[in-house]
Image (cartoon, rainbow, N blue to C red):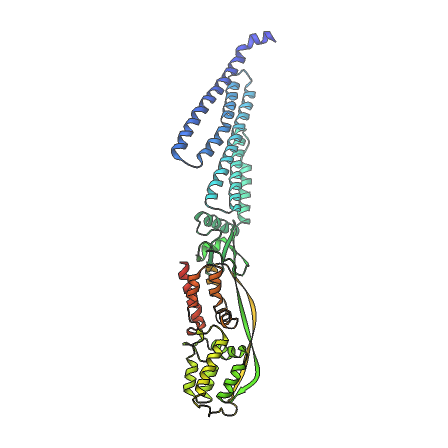
Length: 457
C-alpha cells in the first residue's frame, strides 16, 4: 500500500489540490459576493433583497463543492466512462439545488407581493403551486438532457396534460383570470360594499380564484363569478361606515279595521264620543286616512273634517279641523284634545242645529295594527340607505308615523336609532324636524335618502 502511494502520489495529490483550491476560491468569492449584495441591498432598499441574500447564501459553498469534485475528477486518472458518469451526477445535483433555490425564492417573493396586493389565500396557493410545477418540469427536462435521455415523450405528455387541463377549466379559466385581475387592481376588496347592475349588492366577504362572496343585507350569501365583476358595471361604495351599537331592525305592519258600533248625527254627539273613544279610533280617522291618500300633497284632510264639511255643511269648522297640524302633537291624546277643543269652541257659539241625513251619520271605526318583522337589519348609514330603497311604504309609515304617535315615543324610530345607537345626533335632529305630513310617502323616502347620502359623502 505504501509503495503504491509512493508510486502514485502525484495522481492523488493533483485532484485533491484541485478540489481544495476550488473550495478556497469558493470561500473567497462568497465573502466578495456577500459584500456586493449588502452594498446593493443598502442602495436599492428593495424589501426582497434580504430574502435573496439569505436564500443564495445557503447553496453557494455547495455549488463550489460540486465544482471542486468535477474538476478533481477531470484531472484524475479515472476511466473516461467513470468521469462522464461523475460529471453528469454533479450536473444533476447542481440542477436540483438550483431548482430548489428557484422554488424557494419564487414562492417567498410571490407571497410578499400577493399579500401586498391583498390577494385571497386560494390565489396565493394556486400561484405558488403553478410556479413550483413549472420549475420542476424545467429541471426534469434539463436533467434528462444531461443524461442523454429523450425528452420528446415527456414534452408530449406535458402538452396532453396542459390540453386536458385547458378543456377541463375552459369555463373556470375566465373566472380565474378575472380573479387575478380583481386582486391585482384592488378595485374591489374584502369589506367593500358593492352593487352590481344586475341588482346583487352587499359586503364582500371573500374573493377566491373562482368567485366572489357577497353578504347581502338580509344576511343571505350571494356567490358571484369573478368574470361577472368585470363584465358588468359595479358600484363600489367602499368600506363600511361606523357601526351602530345596536342594529336597526325594520318592521312592517298591516291594519285590521274594527267597527265600534258608535255613530254621530250632529256635532254634540261627535264631540261626546270623541272624548271617550280609544286612541285607536283617533288614529284610524286621522292617520289611516292619511296613509290611504299618501300620494296626495299637500297632506290630505281627516275623516272628521270631511264629514263636518260634506254631511253637516259646516265648512268653516271643517276648514279649522283641516288646519290642525298633526305633526305638532307628541301623542294621539294631545291630538284628540285639540280636535275636541275646536268642536266645543264652535258649539259654544250655538252652532248645533244641523244634523246629518239618514245614512250619512259619522260611523266610528278603530284600527288594529298587526306588526310584522322584515328580513332587513342594518348596522350603518350605507346599509340604512340601501334598505330604505327596498322597504314597503307600510314599513316606512310604521317607523315614521305609528312609532311617534301610537307607540308614544314622541320621535320617529329613525331619529331615535341615529341618535342613540350611531351617535348621529345632528342627522337625527334634521330628520326629526321634517314634517312628514307635507310629503307623499315616496317623497318622504326620497328626502330621507338624500339627507343620509349628504351625510356620508
